[in-house]
Length: 116
Image (tube, rainbow, N blue to C red):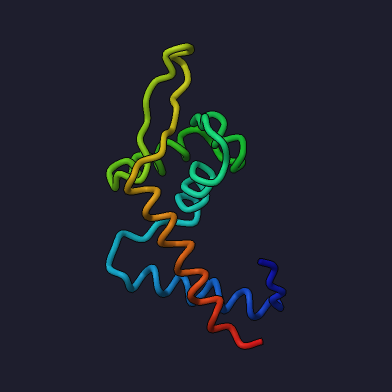
């Protein structure tokens, strides 16, 4: 499905979806946490702290702090890579998958309300 939006329409869509997420009463994520979550769920694994830091252009400690919060929310989990104990592998969880699906549903629902 290809949808052409003008910049103001795209911003309104982003605004409205963000408001929906804030209002739903669940923990809302920062832009960095959302980018990490979407990367983990939309791109082919494996995902490492080092790889996520490189992809997002931030430090490994910044990724670790974000993952600490996301881990407490059970959106992702971490484990040491058995093949290379220096690497920490970031894994998907059921709750995280449901959160991403809910985000996708919210975007689609709001997109239907965008005036054309």
